[in-house]
Image 1 (cartoon, rainbow, N blue to C red):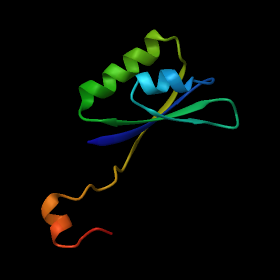
Image 2: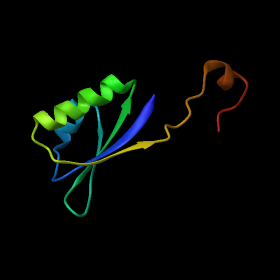
Image 3: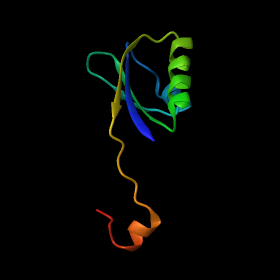
Length: 81
């Protein structure tokens, strides 16, 4: 799974962000930062299509390192940092 930060011009409503399965941060400059965990490239492209269809101006897309999720065996071994 890859995590992406997608910056769009203007304010996105919390309702729209929830419908898009994104975390929302409204930036002081008036833009919105959406954080999206994509299971594959198709889900990322699907989100970008939805943003386009909503008439939102895409400013940037940045791939971030997703946090490591512990497996059950790692949890049992006490690797829960």
